[in-house]
Length: 105
Image (cartoon, rainbow, N blue to C red; front, side, top):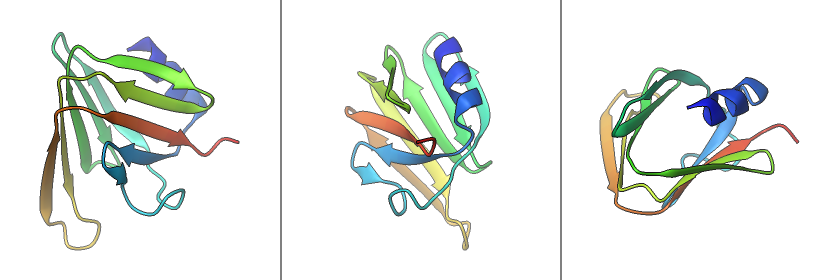
């Protein structure tokens, strides 16, 4: 996924906006990509070695201003561990938009 790799090089840290709102406080949490896997039917993004965004394709990606937008996916599974208790969490979205909000203004 060349679009994401190019964007990620310019935006090392970013906020995460899920289909139901911000993950954490807006513009407070700073996430980094630790793994990207692009398969025929899936796009997997690992953030901070403990947040996983598993998108089922097809999907649409675009850069809007400094942000990276992922939409039109068939399904998104957001799997993560808490940042203090390491408790496992999982959410499934069947539609919506995910924004990786750049901190490069």
